[in-house]
Length: 212
Image 1: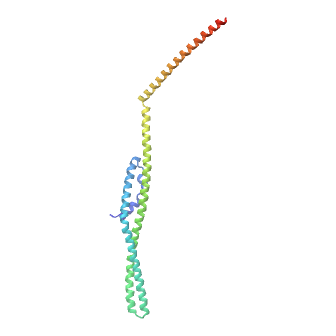
Image 2: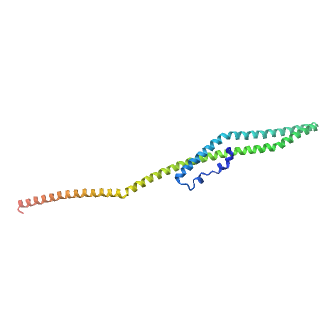
Image 3: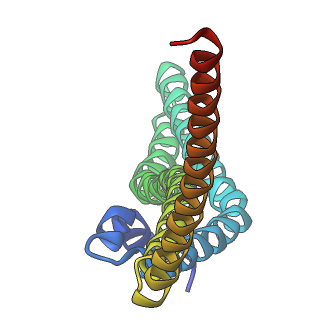
């Protein structure tokens, strides 16, 4: 089946309708298939377009040639009448009438060929636009999936950090820090007491020397 027989399907294809309601993970597969089909159709279209356009041009030439023949026999008939040769005029007019009858058939064939050619152009524009749109949506989708995957990893990490086992370890670490700080406080408190006792002893000695 030629590409022209799929004109309605190609023109009615809608990427937004295709993706409507689809999950992001499934959307990727749908987009890939849509792109593959569109690219295949475009390649088939390219291979058939030249023949369709050639048919249109040939049909147009046949219509023009027939019109020229009609005009020629009409001119000959006039000349025959002017020359007083009615028999020749009748022959020219008979040939003209046959060409006039054929004209409708030739014009109908041309209209069909032109319609097919127009459809090929429409499908070409549609497929190229669809491919560009699908490629853009694919880039957007991949970016969203990357962000979602990163968020999922972060959520998983936070869940692990908030887990009981990890929190116990965290609390143990905090308790160990408190013990270290307490030891430091005791150490410096002892030094402060020693300094205070030494100062009091020096003061007593000074008072005794001064007789106070």
